[in-house]
Length: 112
Image 1: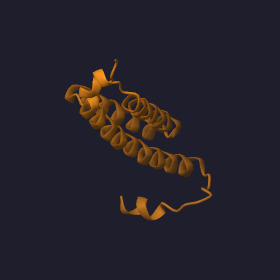
Image 2 (image 1 turned 180 degrees about the vertical axis):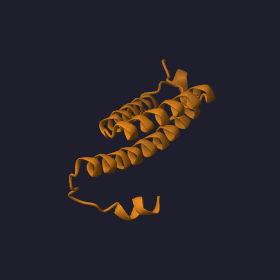
Image 3 (image 1 turned 135 degrees about the horizontal axis):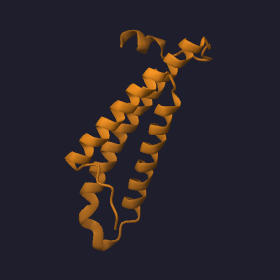
Image 4 (image 1 turned 90 degrees about the vertical axis):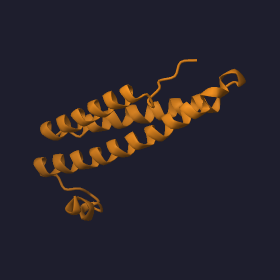
């Protein structure tokens, strides 16, 4: 069974570095779709890990703890990229002069 093990420290550091660099890139070019692509990629990885743990056969039961750690890390990356998407979307709308329909997170961005 193939497992993309995110709980491996080297993989975790590399994924974090790529995520930070892509967030910085999306902030510099002021395009929120870069963050959205990352968000969808992490959501797909999360769905794959949940499907793997749901369809795990008896011979691979020893992998439950590893997959559970991967799911927890997936949630953290989804949260990071979700806030990065909201942040870059806010930057993009200010640059283009668009007005947001619902600006309910304005209080959050003022505190950050």
